[in-house]
Figure 1 (cartoon, one colour):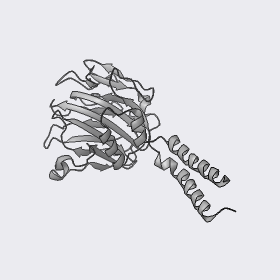
Figure 2 (figure 1 turned 30 degrees about the vertical axis):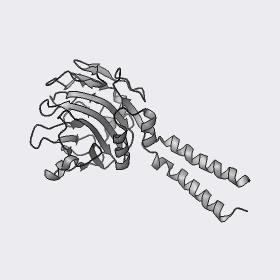
Figure 3 (figure 1 turned 90 degrees about the horizontal axis):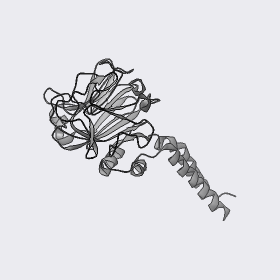
Figure 4 (figure 1 turned 60 degrees about the vertical axis):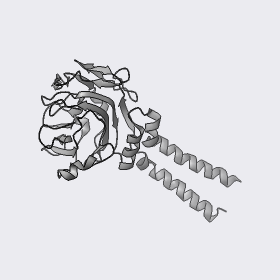
Length: 284
């Protein structure tokens, strides 16, 4: 005869298994840490370095101020291009993360860009726009979402400060975090801007021309600086996970990142282990 306590434990374990896909629904699927090359340390979507871009002090360096970063035959003129396969299957929620350090290099430089090669379909991160109040933005247009550009805003990021950028999209809203904040130094409040935009239906998998430190479909420059780490996740992260990733810094190991953003299989196995433990306890 099974006790009420055992029944309660079993219900808890089954609930954990049922929740596993939700708890572990996001996983790091591509990472470019630029320690030695532009290879993907998690998947197989290895990047290629173009033009004046070089690996320098642990980041991808554009080559300086005013370096042309626009798309040329589908790849950045100067920067890193990664294959479209990197976003294959990402039709709903996603997260893009970058650690950047850039000095002023003019308005509309590019930290990263996903597009189809046109100015009507993209996800584009800019450290500082060329008009007051010179906000940093992650902009979206087309790709199944709104046909007018929408901008998730934050404080300018071209003052040679190390900045953690995360754009996380849940299938409806995109939120832009800088150093784990959505209102860094009160910038958005002071300028009546928002770090969150509503844009249902956006489909990242259609944007297969991808650049890091360059690659915009506009005639924009690469950043006057470095991208130290660039990561793509296959679902949205919550504010707590964003904060933990910021705390880990730009040199976190893949295992440290996985502890914050566990793979679905890992969480499922934990649930199965709990059931196994329950069964062992019932033997005695």
